[in-house]
Amino acid sequence: MEPSGTRQRQLGCMWMLEIRTRRTAAGWIVSATLALFAAGCGASGTVMTSPPSSSTTTVSTRTVRTSGRPAPEAPSPKDAAVALSDRMVSEAMLPAGAVRVDTPLPSELRGPWEVPAGMNLVSVHRVWSAPMPPDVVLAFFETHAPVGFVENGVGTFTSRSTRVMDVVDELGRLPPNIAVAGLEIGVEAQGAGSLVNVIAGAQWTAFRPGDELVGDRDAVVVVSELPWSHDAPAGRRVVATGARRSTIVRSFNMQKVSATVGGGGCFALGPDTVSYRVAFALSAAATPDIVATIAPCTPVGVTVNGRRSVSLAWGSGGLDSAVADALGESNLTFASSARS
Image (cartoon, rainbow, N blue to C red):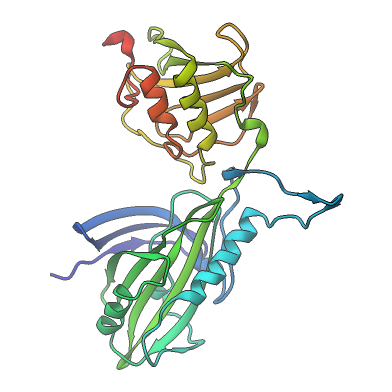
């Protein structure tokens, strides 16, 4: 039986609910995605972006001085993502006989068919015509990922009048401030041949503020369980020093800024649910300079001297594991120890 997918859509720029099948090395899987259908928001060959949000990977050092003169300002993360997308779309491998065309795309071939959760998305696409049927073209793409890319599965969408197949190639090594990047190539029959839509996309994250990084001044890390429910008892409070303090600080400083609106460890919240407050301070009794809050279903929230800073990607730098180790756990359970 041919795997199939269905989509619900509105007109114009829209949110798309996509239920589809995908073949990976482990077999067929079914996924559901709620995402901004960016391709409906721009013309062929244009860059399409989603609304900006707080997100990052590296520390902001926008201007570098050499010999007393300021060097040219580094490109913004968004500009870098646009340049990366332009480069990736030109690196796609095409089967023999394929030629660039300006043919308007059928609606189901416009894509993208998979969109990362969150904001800060840019994409660009090119359309090609190939002289062989879709099955042959797709087989070519499955075995011809560009250098530096990893083939990550094949999907199929079918309707009463259309059958679109696509292959995803992920960029193996991501540049700074890029959360996700890769190619998605859709194929649809066109007469005796095929119409091919090559989409290159990237999700960028903002620079991480330098004042959000913990230095040597903060000698302790205080980890506390915060009850999710107001009437729940207080949880554990652990003061980490020495090696454990260093591990938490190092992992916190390595965290990437979040490009998504969701986090990790998401589950049904109950009376025993807790979040974890990670405070970096001069001493256990001192007011902390930096506080990170690890909570279910959200990115890691950060405040610097009481001021809200950018949010960090859950689990991206190992902070969750370091905090769990300080609490004597193998992983964060978000369950209160007071009722265990």
